[in-house]
Image (cartoon, rainbow, N blue to C red; front, side, top):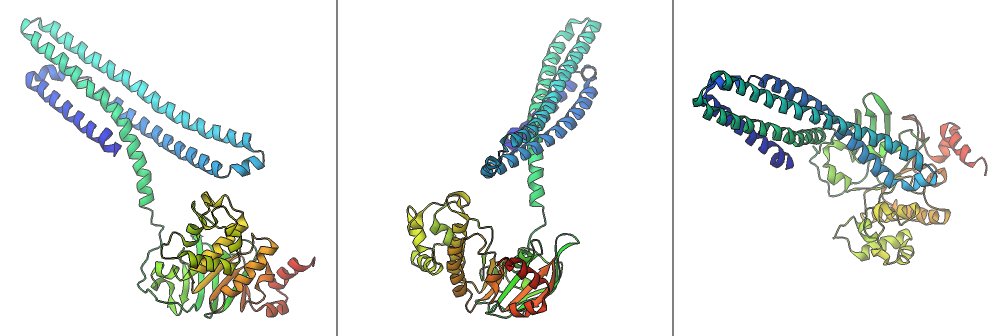
Length: 445
């Protein structure tokens, strides 16, 4: 809005004033006008270099501001980590470096203005000098009125030029800011919702057929992945960190688009489903739980007014955290603050369990669901998981192999490829990747 009100519109008005003044001057005396405007080519050249210099400076200013904002936001969020490792001075030095770049970029922009304004004044003085020279050469009393009017016209002509330089500042900042906004708006990295099927219910049959997926072109994190799971069964996915376990669950939710292969749910390609209808049938408990600023009740229901308090309490009792919530100040109306800062990581994860259970999904994805809870809480969660996965297709990602012994099928991943598939007993009998992982976890026991 400022781009138009304080930048574009005033510049257009000033340009119209300049055109009107020059037209009047030519109408009065075109020869004298040409003499007075003889220095104007120098002004055009100076304006061009000024524009280029200011444009480069403001791009650096905007980039520096973006870096400053990102640095400040990141370090305010992670201030506890900085303090815990006594890194205040080191991070302050990084901030000073970024801030110095911001200062230098602004100084360059100010320097361009400090050069341009004197140049405008010099050109005005030169034009007035030519006018005085012409008047001295004519030595005519009849020219007195013309000279006076031309002096006024020149001052009126150069005043908008000075103002335009100021308005150009606003214009440049608006153009650079809008360029950054349009770059985001023009970004084509989106998931197109081309599906038209809105199922009333999903059985939960899932099939991956020769799926290849990469976050960056040709850098595949999943290679030729093929497996299937029948409705109501439990599939466990295990493997070293970075083997592609979470990537598989993200593809089921259609958070990303695969490059090769097909993914089917209930025999239909995943792209045939309406993306919102599909996600409403899938419940997810992530390893990194995110809570919004608000009450426990609002975080469980995600501010869905259709869900009643009785339903929330019933789900919390099933998970086993109702008593814990009732001990909080305000119980279900306790404010968890931004990102759940007032709760422990384990408590946030338990709340995410209630959230998943409450929506009664047809497909349940548990991504390291017990990684952040203590032994006592893990027993509660494990009992809740057993109830939760009953008659429901479940995909469990776990490092603790003790939690997946009862899975109907276990897929072992390594570097984005499936190495082994089978039940717990079958994989131990193979004495392969799964056997090695199992021994590493239980050799001390």
